[in-house]
Image (tube, rainbow over all chains, first blue to last red; front, side):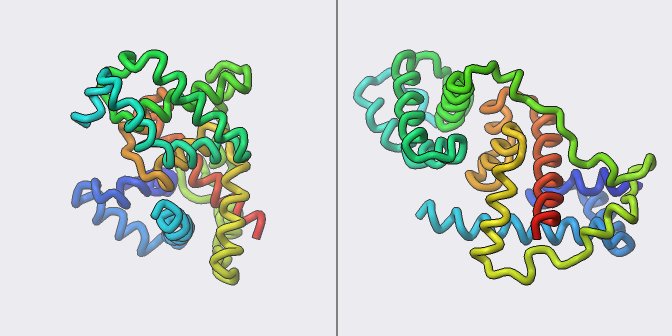
Length: 60
Length: 185
């Protein structure tokens, strides 16, 4: 099983949907038990979505 | 990509410049944080490209090549070699124990709401302010990945790092940004 510092390094791979099935399952299980990693992923998604809304509008 | 390879056709050079201007302007503004300096940097980048268009071998997207030229031009302005600007700053220190699990005391401060109580505009201002405080390499990698949405392979070429190193740089950038935002809010 991966440690928390390894789990949060997988952020981009999870976002880009390039993780193998077993790793995706491992992440889901990890999130069930680890509130800090879960919060880290939620915060990152929130921040990137804010940036994405602004810069996508600017590019148009 | 096939169009990009055919850049020795002089008639296409102007069209190529026009096609990439908007994206390069954004990157220049991002690097310099000054609109006049950014405009100069875009011109320098194209001038450098037009001096030796045959230096582009087509092995990466033309936009990657132009970003790379711009980055070198920017380093030249700072009169420092790129290597001196790279920082091995790892923001994760102190957040994990020796087994790689979160240190409860350090992690607990991230449990408060993140950018929640703010209007979107205000939240964005905080994110952008904190982004500007990141070390140059982390900031540039973050910009190309999450704002320009370039592929990792192209970003790695533009920054002259391996894809493995790029993943570490991006991880550190994300972590540093989140820490800075939590401290600012």
